[in-house]
Image 1 (tube, rainbow, N blue to C red):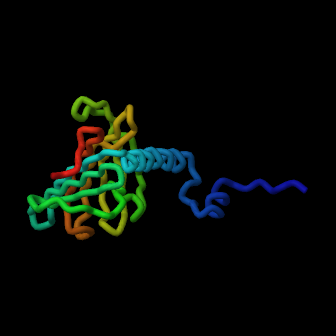
Image 2: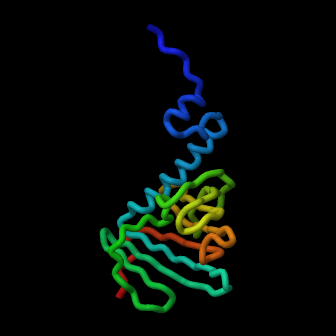
Image 3: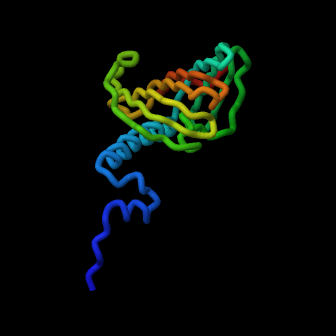
Length: 173
C-alpha cells in the first residue's frame, strides 16, 4: 500500500508548526535558530560578563552587571554590593517566550571583533519588543544586544547589554 502524499502545510499542522509551511517561513526559522545557537553558545562560556543599562519608563537609568565563572554566578545593581546568584544564567532569557521575524541586518565591528547584526521580535513574560543582536563571526557568541520594549509591556523601555568572555573575567572582590 502506498502512502498518500501530504502537503507541507499538513505536515506543519501535524507537528504543531503550521506557520512553517512556506519557504520564507522555513528560512526565517533557520535564522531564528542562528540566534538561539548564539545564546546557547554564550550561556555555555566558562567565564563571561554581561553589563547592562536599562532605561525605565519614567526616565531613570539602571545599571546591572553579571559575572559567571564556571558554575559560580554573581550580580549587582547600580552601586550595590556584589551578590552571589544561584540561578543558572540564560543571558537573553529566550526560554520565556517566542522569537520571530529573525533577520540578518548587516555587519559591524564591536571592539575590533567582526560581528553579524541580527534583528528579531520577542514576546515573553519579561516583555515584548524588538531586539538587535551582534553575534561574533568567529566564536558564535553574543557581543551586544539592544532591546526596545513595546510600550506598556515591561517596566523598561530600552535595554543595552555588552558581553565579554575569557580569562580576564574574575570573581568580584
